[in-house]
Image (cartoon, rainbow, N blue to C red; front, top):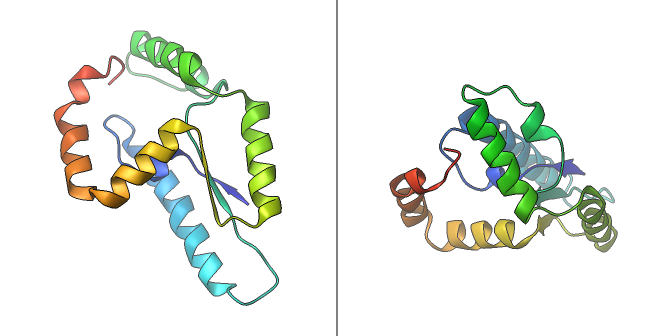
Length: 133
């Protein structure tokens, strides 16, 4: 069981290093799943959307004001850590290889699969409308 993030599905401005690590977790998990195919070992990766954790507020930031705006944004949309954990456990018990947690993660997964080039274009074009970017 590996915990990724919706940022392992989509590159996002100002989250370059974070996205790179999450894309790495995703690639590692998918490769390991392929290696273990046919064995009795399951490999799952969870992609939670916003969650109430201390991650954002404890992160280093060039602009502490933007960090606080992002923390408030996540707090208004995020799931509790307990709810995220419940969904992960349920997905692992069911043997799901991918667990998308929250509307944001499911929407990002869908649009990046259906329209990958357009998605990247739109993220770049509208990044100025996100108050913490």
